[in-house]
Image 1 (cartoon, helix red, strand yellow):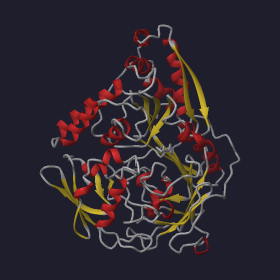
Image 2 (cartoon, rainbow, N blue to C red):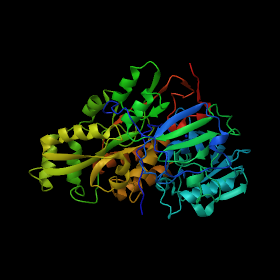
Image 3 (cartoon, helix red, strand yellow):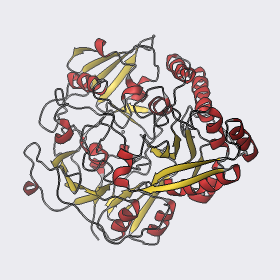
Image 4 (cartoon, rainbow, N blue to C red):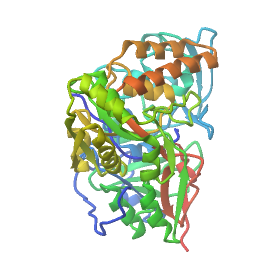
Length: 521
């Protein structure tokens, strides 16, 4: 069975519509729970607790396996670490790997692993854990969404000259290979733990699992022996709370300390209260509408082009983001990415109507569109898009779905629905979301020419020439693919003024949570 992905809107770098409305929310304290590594709730002081939220999108099937299709992202960020993380400029920098080098072919990369690092259960981190992690990610029976970007690794040719050296052999050259290891899902697990890590959370990160309860409160305690320095918070609780309006209300009522992925409208409400801080930065997450290109009417390129020609990206930025973002023009690669190609697609209603007529719809068409308000941007995008499509004869019925079921029952199942993607670098987003057969290819688009462009880009050693291959790929997916992408909204998060240490230069996947702390006034 193919499992789906979350829409937890972290608006990250990389290592809304409506106002906050509901004043009452429920902490469901029943469900899956457990104890890990001898830590119990009784052994942790009930002070210095930091409260964050998650959106319950997997209906209590959340997994602590970092690369699972139903990964439980907030605690995973605290429990596990990557070999490589991005610096403030988005370039690969050391994490569990202290250094790396590659040969002249671009097919062999040698990583040196830090010494004296231990997993939460006391096991030392070694090169064998790294090899095991990547074999797990690339296990075809596991169906990891990260696999399409990493399947360039030849898992039969791993080498470990010593306990802290790993040599990756690639099937084809990829001179940007370390960039792939910055993926937010590519976090190292212990050798032999694939069957248990979903519940144990056994990583090397700054916090350890106390109790797992996806329906209620998942509790984590400081890892006192963390190699990066003792965390300043004693405990972090991750509370199940569906809907951004409810989460924002909880922040305003001091029930939680932190909320991310909020809209400009929600941020405006929070700004009215002097007890909270708003951080806003350019981000690479995007939200849009996807057409299943394998079914009628979206299997017709003329229909897809018509559907894209009715959208005005610049007007979307003005209406929905109020200028707090950048138009995307159907390009999934962010303007902040070094391989970004600037497109400028203007709406053309007459051409859209002509294309629909050629496709057999001279009187337009009726289409159902599914969205969820758990993503604060999808409803306004759908509403604005439906209005823009009317003059071309495209009549859209919007179906608003509950967030608890949307990502399992609608995403990648309905022919036309909303989607959102966390920040990814060009190679990652193009491979994971648009390559033929990719697990999370939610448009089901398959284009051999596009696939080959990405192969060519990876094999090119010269940066400028590599950029040209990525540019061709972006142009092709924007013009022919099944994703309607209006904009890249700025990343907006809010937290109590009692919270310190959240670096505004980093998104949630790359915050150094060991440095975060609370002070009471």
